[in-house]
Image 1 (spheres, rainbow, N blue to C red):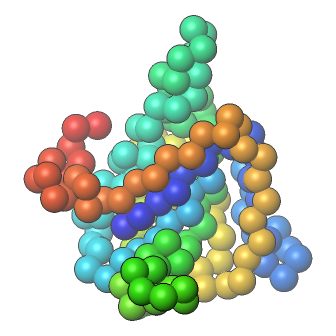
Image 2 (image 1 turned 60 degrees about the vertical axis):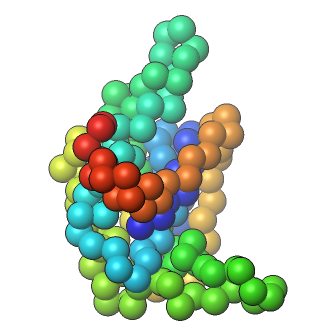
Image 3 (image 1 turned 90 degrees about the vertical axis):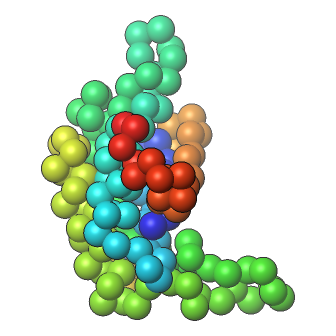
Length: 159
């Protein structure tokens, strides 16, 4: 699984002009599910997301997690993160998981965030055309791909 994690002061997602998810301070997470991803990937990604220390402490050091600050997460499914752009100028999405699998793993990721101590998780609407509005804080943007933990055999356990 892949994630683009942005530290935000606030974020909101709308479908057909209606707000379907809205948070205050925390993370906007754009989440892509690739073919071959599993529940283990969703759990690793959730654990790593909840533990990511990119909020500043009293010494102005990035040392606090979204859990530490009582922050929130807005998770938006985004299959385009799995784009293959090696050839030509038009991305291919053959490496994205099938919609049924992707939706199941996206939902599992959101539930696992709560299980990992995130106070509140809001979501977009899987498969819908969404408008996402955010106020970046920093900006601070982190890219995650569960392949880095699986390929090293670390299983994401060093959190």
